Length: 372
Image (cartoon, rainbow, N blue to C red; front, side, top):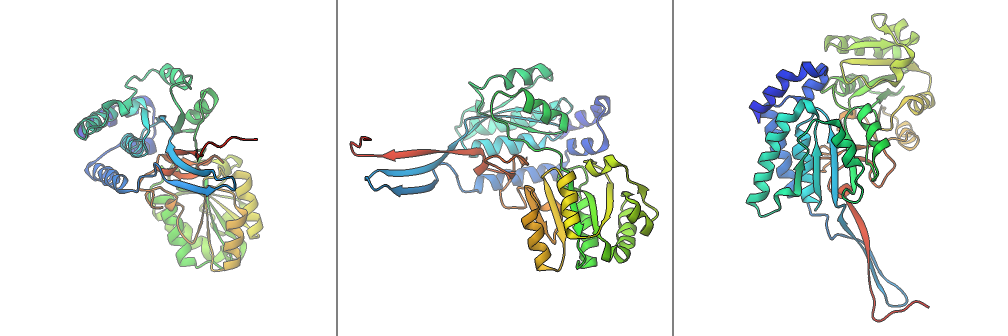
């Protein structure tokens, strides 16, 4: 796997992908060990299949229950993340689904190597080798062909850039579980612990900037902006972050570049952060409503009232209080691993693990009952 990945990483610049995408593509021994641990965790999770979600005995004597069942065949399309090959295959096997995996052309050799290992493992434990299949061609037409086969594929899941997600949403003839841009915000409230706020924004922006739950915009209440911004700017700049501020933020911290209108909607996936000063919590919520992508929003505050209002009024797949946006992750939330983070208002929202890869059916037991 390492040899195959080195081949892909070496060829990556020819595909025009940037540093953040190359980081997502690259595997090393530590990342492979992390993937392996993730598979062990998935194996140890409770089996969702057959779980009874509700049951009752009707007045007429019918025994009614609702149970969890597999989706069927899941088509997963993703870019630059060969670890997704292992995670997606494992989650689908554990949830009783067959999977068809189509990674990006830049990870072709790595994905083939990982898939070969997984197929051998399925053989060893007596499961169908074809329960997990890989689309080994880089031809874009193959994706369109598969998206047009709802009689064979029950769910499509795109995981990648905005262009990929839009294409899948437009072409798929089956349901699509998707996430849009990860334009995540961190709001530092008037009552925030400033030490905690500095540590949280540093982590949210720099711990792994090329992922969808990294913070892209920092909103600061005007009452603490003079005390907070110089400290935050110094810390972030020392970590290599380029800051783009509105006029009020730059008046306090002039080393920031001027923010453009496009910056408030940007998913940078890089060491760039937009910064704005707001007058009230209401203004912060309004900014997020205008520019957010429904992914992850966070507040740093010591006010229980402010925290409760933020949680109630912000409409995203995850709302975080006094912690980094990076915690909106399947592994961090106890799912073992995730198939992606959904921003759709679908049966699944936020990190999607085993339970989100199942659906339900009603089971009705009677004793000669007829409806009159």
